[in-house]
Image (cartoon, rainbow, N blue to C red; front, side):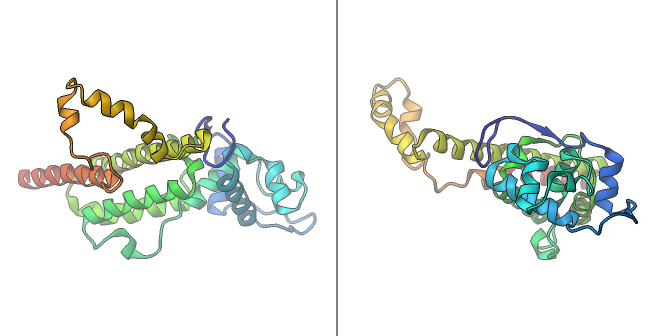
Length: 259
């Protein structure tokens, strides 16, 4: 796996541990031992330490040994709290995806603003925790954060008038778009770290040849594009997000007209 913050190669899989035990830990329903030495840590401390390691060094650096070292304790002591790394990963996912408690963070009350806010918040989440892109979350363990977040968004978008599967599909659509955008941003940052060239320097190196090729007349449409076409001022993420919402609005309007 790629070393360093936010490496993109290698994949972990959510839900690959003891599912029942993970759910007990997430929902705090497991039995606590009544015998033995008094715990010196909390599960929250362990999860926070693991998230900190992943943020700073990449997901590949997260191990029971590494987290124990971060907490200044022995590796075996962590096994009193959870079975292993697979279960720890699911707890980490639930922790970082905890939704905001501020209703205003889901927009002005309309379904469109709620989905737009969800998209922006999800992008920010991946920017804060790029290691999330290394996790296959196609089979997520549904903890408090996952269900709280889904409940909040579904409540806001229910007025769209779509069927329940369609409402969930709208959320999946936005999430898929955001994951693609976040991955592209991460790849750009990783390319800069690996090559030592900034994005500007990379394109400046190609400019002399590109100017010569475009002046040849072979690519007239490309040559006619506005000089700001490839500039940093255009927000491609927001443009794409709004066009997806435009499509959903057309669909929701048509569905309303049919009823």
